[in-house]
Each structure stands twice: as C-alpha cells, then as structure tokens.
Amino acid sequence: MSPLSPAYFAFAAIAITLYWACFRWKYARLSILLLANVFFLARLAWFYPAILIAAATIDFLVGLGLQNLARERHTPRLALVSVSVLLNVGLLAATKFFPVMLGELYHWVFPLSLSFYCFQSMTYTIDLYRGTRPGTRSYLTHLTSATLFTVIVAGPINRISDLIKQLQQPFSLTPTQGGRAFLLISSGLVKKLLIADFLSNNVANRIFDTPTLYSGAEVLIGVYAYALQIYFDFSGYTDIAMGLCLLFGLVVPDNFNRPYQSLNLADFWRRWHITFSNWLRDYVFFSLPNAARWKGAGYVYPIIVMLLGGLWHGIGWPFVLWGLLHGVGLTSLRTLQTVRQKFQGKRPATQWGRYLSIFVTFHFVCLTWIFFRSPDVATAFTILGRLGSMTFSIANITLPMIAMMLLGLALHAIPPKWFDRTVEIFGRAPFILQGAGLAAAVLLIELLSGRGSTSFVYSNF
Image (cartoon, rainbow, N blue to C red; front, side, top):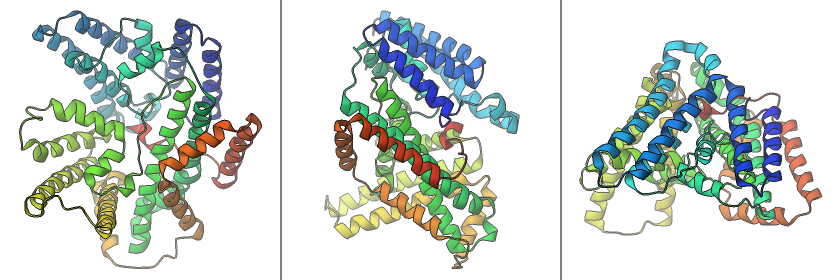
C-alpha cells in the first residue's frame, strides 16, 4: 500500500476517525493505532509485523532492564544496550545487503526498508543507557510508538521517548492544528505529484539515463532539476507524515528548512534531512572515541560519519563518493573557518559575501547530487564530462520544464512565517471553505501532474 495511493489515505482516514472516537480512553486509542500500524505493515508484506513486533519487544525488554539497573552498574547496562544496537544494526545491514544479493527481486520480496525503524528504535535504548531521557513500562505504548505507520517508510526520525510522552498524554486537536495538518498534507501532495514527479519524468531521469544525448547546458539544467526533484520528493513525504501525525495528536520534527539557501555545507546539514543529521551527530559522532574532547575530532570524524551516511543510502561507489565529498567538504570548511578566525577574527560577512556563499554551497551540493543520482561512477563522470564540454544548446528544454523549476524555486524560498500565517487563516475558515481549498489542490494536481506517480525516493533507503 503506497503512501500516495487512494487506499492509503482511505485507510488513514478510517484509523484517524476511530482514534478520535476513543479520545477519552487512552488504551483504546493506543490499541487502535497499534492495529493500524500492524495492518499497514501486513499490507506491505505478511512478515513485517512479526519481524518488527519481535524486534520492538526485545528493545522494550532491554529498556526495562536499563530502567531497573542502577547507573553505576556499567557492565550489565552496556551488555543490554549492545543487544539492542546489534539487533537494529543487523536489521539495518540486512536491508542494505539484500538488494545486492537479490537484485531486482529485492523490491518485490522486501517492499519496505527497515532503516527508519532501526534509527528510531536505537534512540530509545541508547537514550536510556545514557540517562538522557525516560523510558516506559507500558508494552502497548512502546509497540505503538516503535511501529508508527505514518513515519516508518521514510521518517522523520523521531526519538521514541518523545513519541511515548505524547501518546501518554490526553488527546487534543485544535482547529488551528487541524488546519495545519490538512495544509501540510496538501502541500506534500503538491510537492510530490505536481513538482517532483514532473521534474523526474520530464527532465532528470532522461538526462541522467542518457547524458551523451544532451548538451552541457541541458545536462546542467538536468542536475538543477534533480536537486529540486529530490528536495520536493522528500520534503513532500515529510509534509504528509507530519500532517497525518498531527491528526493523531502527535507533533513530529520537520526535516527541512530551505536547505538550498544554506551559507555553507555545515549549515546545509542543519537544514537538510534534519532528523538524520541530528541522529548522526547524537548517536554516531558523539559515540566515537573522545568526540567531545579531542580537538581533531572536528576534522577527522566528519569524514567517517559522512562515509557511513553514504553507505546507508546504498552499497556502491557512487554513494561512497557522495559521502566522501561531503565529509571532505565539512572538514575543509572547518579548516577554512579556523584559519580565517585566526587571521581575521569574527568579522561578519557582507551581504554580497552571503550571496556568494549560498551560490558556492548550492553548486557544491549539486555536484555531489551527480554521484548520488548516477547508477554508477562511469555515468557520473560522463555527466561531468558533458558539463565540461561547454556546449550550450537547449533544444530539448521546454517552457513547461523551466516554468516548473521556477515554481519550485519560488516555493523553496517561501519564509516559514508565511506558511504559519496561512495556517492561522485556514484554521479559522469555515469548514466549507477548507474543503473547497483542499478540493482545489487535488484538482490542480490532477490537471497538471499527469497520470500515475513514482515511489518516494527515500522509501528505498
């Protein structure tokens, strides 16, 4: 059941309605949501509920053990958290090596990657081991939060303890929150079906699949198109997930904050896939030896962390090079900032300097997207060769392609305050006007996006 299919939204609507009907009874609400999670997983493949409930049960028992053991008992606590980490890393590794072994058969047998489940689950036991967040003794609450169907496909990556805290609180949903939820779902559908799929089918896929058929200028436009496609694809899923969670009374973190307006590469990773960046920082970087004390950690460990991030996206040289480029870029940035501060102090950048920084950062990110999108290293270097050919024909680029890219740039640049203001207005509007607005969004997508849709890019990771 694809998160874009009418069946998915009908299923979500039924689950939300039943959840609302039991808003006074916490355990009834949790049971309904857990059943919805199990049903969704079973619709993907019959074995997913068994695997994930078994894994979540082990994590719950590990959590109980960590809560019962005093902080001074380091050895048994370390042994317990190691069980959880090895379990989840094993599941994560399996999802990465199965595609290599099974090839095209993988997506037929395993339609869902378990990455986002594993990332979330490890936050619970590691936080308990570190003593930074509380746990729960409610098996029902833990299972419900660990298998939450709205985020299990492609995030956002939540801390399980935060979900548990919200699920244990009384359910409430204000008109403003309801308006925000429906606007988020609508914006997610527009981002995915109207912009991302159009750019994917009409520009990016064609140029990346056969780059030698296009001029250097057309290939450059194709790289820009892919940068916009992957942003609107992934942020579209995030918007839908955030909206559905809000209808269940759950607030989950956003994953994006206008990343292509970043001043430097470190700023980009504070704006792009924010929950994954925070996860890498909190659970990988700070788990490395002396990460908080060794002065050289900021120069060496970013390369290690980004290489691991690249391998998470896929076992192959293109992803390794993508991670390596970002790791070296972060280390180079740290070195440049240290040297500049030593000789120039903390002199603020001029406005033109900020524009130049944004321009350079955006194009470095686009350079790395070439390796991320290319099926192999040879194709990536072919694309780089076409860019270096300095040929300027744009005969294969149409006005609708340019118009869609300009629309994407405009939407990317919208300040968050504008969206919040729209939420307030929409939340106060009569129900009839809200329904008309949603119907208009669906009609716009139907008229302009074409037939069919592709799966979310990050559902494969």
